[in-house]
Image (tube, helix red, strand yellow):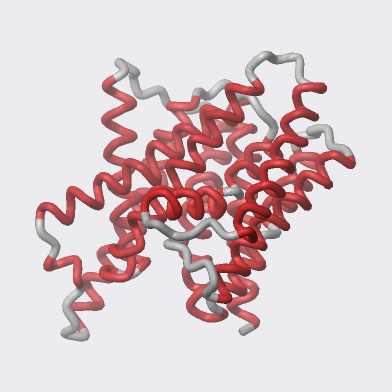
Length: 307
């Protein structure tokens, strides 16, 4: 139990660190495409090692991994999910983070359970109950408050552009969560996550060089931030959260995961010297309460979600 709680907290902290590391890389002069490329190139060997280990284990135990029976249509589906969930969503997130604070970015991404509920209502005919509408109102009231505060403080005219890009990222990831559920159940979370991340890596490389970019080696200081981004904030927490769910369950892991925006806020103020105010705290509380309402409905079985 304690190992599960520790893994969930550490995984949440490492995910919360992602926005901070990306901001540091931007300050060193790296572009969105460069950060995305090196993040995926550096983390890809880890996912390849996980797949190799799963295949080796399945051959030793004589228990065939479902991966062996995938058709070409199955691989195409996983490629498409990798594109939606880890390439498109990541690119939109990194692009938006250029224009808004790490606090607003993290809080906007955290609203994806609300978006999943809306998508499920539209495409899966799940009812939008009063609890879901209340959650929607609370959550996006919090986002609007933080957005309004940043408009007052920012001299840039791109705050709206940044928020819309990050919101589009949250929508892309929400669609991925809905469509990926069947594949996760079939392949297992370790195999599916590794395949989707590797598929995303392929798209990142093709996209980067199709724009005519040349491979530019980052400066020495940037390597430390890139390695931390690829391994500490991408590879390691993706499996820590999976392991935590296996030990303490999805509900407890989600409760601990709600600390993510708070951790990002503290790190952004302390590390990046981003401004903060009582409005930031109020906005965070509203978003956390709204997301918690959706999670409570899912847990009780009244509002089953495809998440």
